[in-house]
Amino acid sequence: MRRDELVAYLNGFLRVAEIEDKSQNGLQVGGPEEVTKVAFAVDGCQASFERAVAAGAQLLMVHHGLFWSESQLLTGLHLRRVRTLIDGRCGLYAAHLPLDAHPEVGNNAQMARLLRLKDVRSFGEQNGLKIGMVGVLDRALDMPGFLGRLVEALGRPPIRVLDHGPDEIERVGCISGGAASMMDQAEQEAVDAYVTGETSHSRYHEAAERGLNVFFAGHYATETLGVKALARHLEEEFELETVFLHLPTGM
Image 1: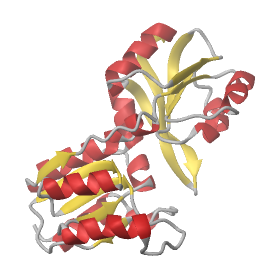
Image 2: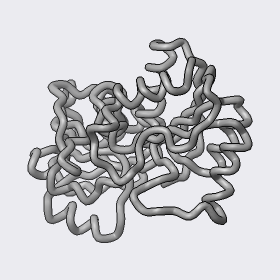
Image 3: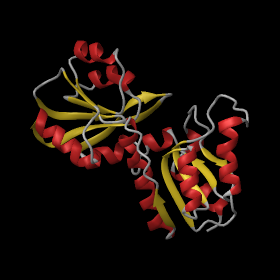
């Protein structure tokens, strides 16, 4: 498949031009004009670049790319990363908020599906875009029951659980990654459980004062969902060969 055709498809499917983001979403590093194999990873880092090249991919698609709103000089670590892609004849495509918010392959749409939520709708506004999902479980669960459901969905236990909310969980809000700062919006949605990625010391008291059950399920774990779903989508749409590069951080 022609790279430019694939990039144009991704830009449209993910609504890249419509979404304000600090990430420079889209094609960040050019590569071969023909693409037969696409690698997928959460992070644009040296390890994912080396593994994409070793896998024979002509394009690597990541959630966290190399280029953000701040200017970055091509020196040191940054130069080494870009050189690995160029020398390995592999391009780089990034989709940050567009992949969080997508209603089909997005991180939060996929989390809602895996948690078996019903009556799902978007919530959690960032830059005028609602990036999260909120819905109702197929049946009410106690805290251990919901924890089991979450482990089943993500394949690992949460990093931390703060149990300051109701004993019975039915209404659930999901915002992947680093969305602990959006607890106020979860409280406004009257969720019984809020699932996000990572936390910090100060969030303990905020969760307690807001009366929230918060499941910090891991930044990495909650953001593998979108890239995996997008890989499946491209396989079905274009019969492209894909590979997911699993590089967990424990965070």
